[in-house]
Length: 81
Image (cartoon, one colour):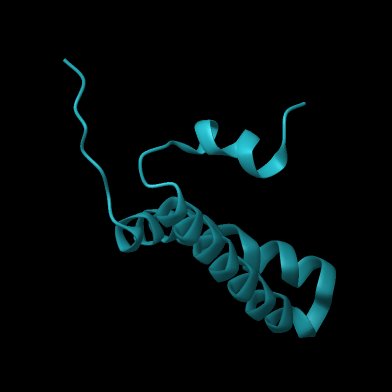
């Protein structure tokens, strides 16, 4: 039997942050320091801003389509291939 459990927007946002943040903390500083030199801190701030934007968009899309998965509402937003 399939469960109809749903998560809230805050849970989705937290889940995205929990998945992305450890990877960013481990790998981004070394990569950015290699390519950007001493100004790599600017790229970290920009990555944080864009990552927060992605979490915000995912949370808003989840609230607009509460009974659908990403695969179900993606064609409504992007159109069919």
